Length: 258
Image (cartoon, rainbow, N blue to C red; front, side):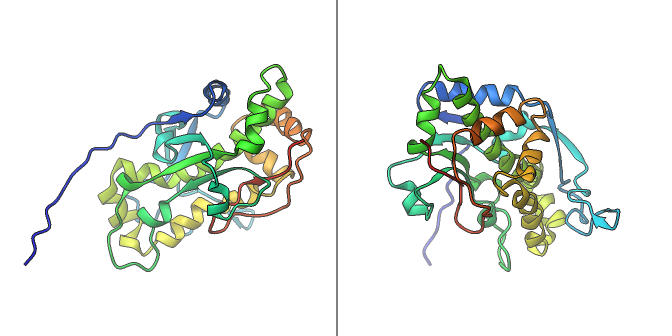
């Protein structure tokens, strides 16, 4: 019988920002302007984590079972490890349209929450998450260092994608805290994986209601003092944005920059 040897490779999670020099400064500025510094995440040992939550005014309150508070920046890398500029032809390979401005891409569905699988998934060590900015639309905004409104428009793009990251953190942080307990208890050995994915994604349907008060409200939850100015600056770039939601392949914000 063939002998399959085990191999190990350590991995350290952090945030890498790759692109033209101003990009890191703009990203760090957006993160430093965060006014909501913490996030409620699910407990890895809570067997009722993804069960029915609290009901208020006849409606089920989202994330009511997320009862563990963590600092956002300290755990950000559990959901996003790169913020970068797209590679040549990347949008086309992912099925994104020519007018896509940015997207957040992650593989939690494969490595943490496979539905209807009969195996223990790879776990958090295999997790990949990244915010990707397009050359065509984001670079012109990035290189307009003398135009604060255009930089505010880029800050809005980053803030939008970071809210996707924050919502993902609610279900990735517990995997990093204690993967064994998370898989066996909160995820019920895979039986509750679909509910975990739902909890991660449902708020993003409001966030991706482009150009509406839903999108603005989602961003203002974390940047109340800056969200409106950034939102208006982005709209000032006259980027047509249909009300489309993300399903399957990444569908980033759409628009045509003048």
